[in-house]
Length: 339
Image 1 (cartoon, rainbow, N blue to C red):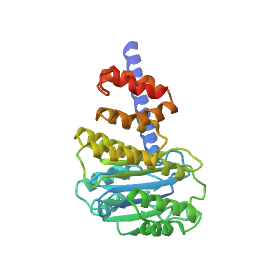
Image 2 (image 1 turned 180 degrees about the horizontal axis):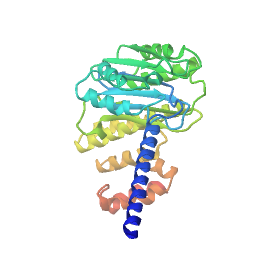
Image 3 (image 1 turned 135 degrees about the vertical axis):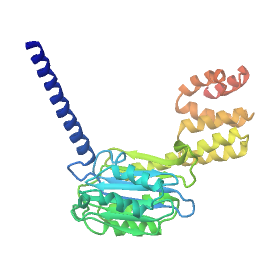
Image 4 (image 1 turned 30 degrees about the vertical axis):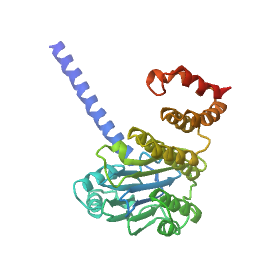
């Protein structure tokens, strides 16, 4: 009897512990989705009507804003969820739009289910350019949004109420592609007063208007500045660098298609954007060698080897991987540029 009683007692303790652990985990998960402080500040969701590209850009005085606020999927839509942020608006909003709901309908449905909607700020745009936004009446002031053709600009916890109108005006008047225009909106927000707490992190996502069916190919930009005294300046630097690497990738694709001149144009465009990037110059030179244009490659190799002689150490290892001709004379000519 004592053994059975002891066993029952142990089972009871185990079950009680399991219940408490489940409640604790559920509460922690709930709190992780609804932080006790307003995490995020000004953002823009937008669509390029010419290309169909969709994007989100955001800046905040909060560490690592990128994983939480911006959401986008090629051919579906884009979402910014902020203030007393609930990240599920991003995932669920995209799910609803993918299932065929318009952005306004998706936002309305999610808000109706959210008892804390008066402290949320959310904007959504779909692949057809239908857009809507919500600013809860209990968001910390100054807070508001402006919806325009193919975009919505929204902000909370601002120094003043001029921020989101300034973003809208900047986006509408800016030139360039979607990334350029969204960056202009963020810059305008900061100039108008920005976050009353200051600045810390930023992020930008742009997805293609023509889904490839492979999500990793659909993201034109997916950039984050987690912690910086000048997050928008750093975000612009990363956008330029990403543009350069996009040209490099296009050059590699042209090589695969035997379009040598197209490849060289792309490599040259990349180097114009970031002229001191040894990696890009090096692989441009390698491509020239593989095209049989060794003489043209040597000045590029010379420049790279002067930056860092480790590239010269790397070079003889490439023939085994098929990245340079397995010809000692060619390799020696390349290495002569290191002298």
